[in-house]
Amino acid sequence: MADSTVMIRVAFVGKGGAGKSTIAGTFARLLARGGEPVLALDSDPMPGMPYSLGVAVDDCPIPDDVVVPGPEGGPRWVLRPELDAAAMIERYAATCPDGVRYLQFGNLWGHVVRLQQAQHAWSQVVSELDRDRWHVVGDLPGGTRQAMFGWAKYADTVCLVVEPTVKSLHTAKRLFGVTGARWGPSRLVLVVNKARSDSDVDRVCERLELPAAAAVAYDEAASRGDRRGAAPLDEAPDGPLARSVEGLVAHVQSLYSSI
Ligand SMILES: Nc1ncnc2c1ncn2[C@@H]1O[C@H](COP(=O)(O)OP(=O)(O)O)[C@@H](O)[C@H]1O
Ligand SMILES: [Mg+2]
Image (cartoon, rainbow, N blue to C red; front, side, top):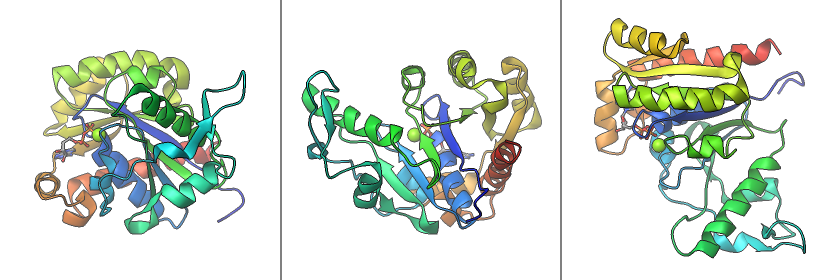
């Protein structure tokens, strides 16, 4: 890897069902084909990335016992002394097609202590990630909550995924308010997904007053693959979804080359 490579740190947000996981997983794989290391971070308690990454496991949460009680006056839980972010990735991140490594949030079910343990482990890993080691592609849960509470702090670019439906637009409008304040318009990238016509794309752009960095067409083959658990890149490697996400990768890369 060239010393001058600036590592991408992008998080995908949007309404549930808009296509965040589909696009984020495809993005991660296409980015990894450039030969540099890519870490896919799934902080959705209902993980969706494995399907689009094409990884065989669909549930590989970080175990609860990676944390121990924190020091007096410090965080409630901290990673075991022998574990840091790099060790967590080495140990718990699945290896996916195209070499993407995939790390999934811990279990969010069970009682409140387990929930806190999972959250502390995750936030420590995410805040201690080595900036120069990985391109990071994050998939957030639907809605505004996690974006608001800082779960995407690692990201310096946010992809807002919007379907041309009234509901998806409504969520996007709110997310735009939340994320726009933090990342600014130059690092807030609009992706219109499941577009069936140019007017679908225009409507979303007009409503959000943002240009579309990528317009991803509704892809019948990708949708068919989804019904039998195949990743878009495996089911339809040259389909509209794959081609548009390729364009999105190039767009996001161009944001970094001008730093
Ligand atoms: N461009 C597309 N064309 C066809 N189907 C799509 C497209 N993008 C996403 N989908 C389908 O939409 C559904 C929701 O996508 P998903 O990525 O799980 O959404 P999210 O992560 O935002 O909740 C899935 O069934 C997926 O296969
Ligand atoms: Mg999802």
